[in-house]
Amino acid sequence: MSIAFPYHITGPGLTATASGDRHVIDMLYQLLFTSPGERVNRPDFGCGLLNLVFEPNVTGATGLTAVITTSVQQWLGDLIDVGRVDVEPIDSTMSITIRFVIRTTGRAEVAVFSIPRLP
Image (tube, rainbow, N blue to C red):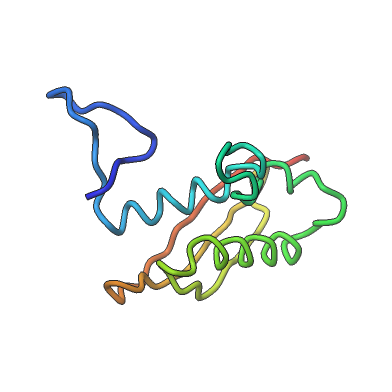
């Protein structure tokens, strides 16, 4: 078991935990939504997805897909095999779907994340 994200305390006053598969999805969330420079001991960690949505050099789903795929492979490549990353605008949000296989179990997973986007 690993510490759950976001960190919280359970009813009996213990640190909440997450199973292996859930922990991998938690790590994906942290990677996508952490901006490089936010972590003191790992200044290059993070995808900075919230900032990338507004960058002129990374326009459209293709640019975001490439940045996300590269970042996930760099930081979580020892834990998962990335199968496919899809980025698509849906109304006022950007939906990111990551299909991957957890290396230790061989289990296929799908994680979906949403972020607001400019109108």
